[in-house]
Image (tube, rainbow, N blue to C red):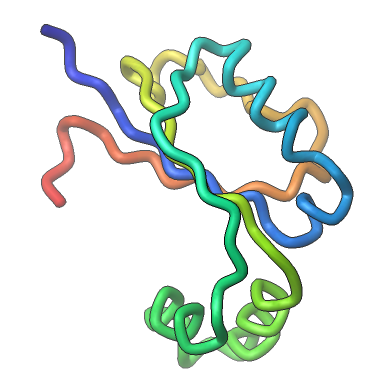
Length: 111
């Protein structure tokens, strides 16, 4: 059986506000990704501070927490075979204004 990679995406508050959720989901599905889980949520300030704890000493940290707390986000997990190599450097987005965060978990990584 082939190993599947998991990709976490977070559609940030401005992406939700601008109505881009459907377009982002569509682009992943068109590339052959399978949606495993999705959740619509508004993260608390405390949750965000914990999530971004590694960035706490950075000067942009307060603004990042404030921005991510400014509205709801859509968090999701997709699965696919060899995401990093299968895309060949092609972005999900053909334009940079799609506000999305990707975290790729390879089957070769130990978490």
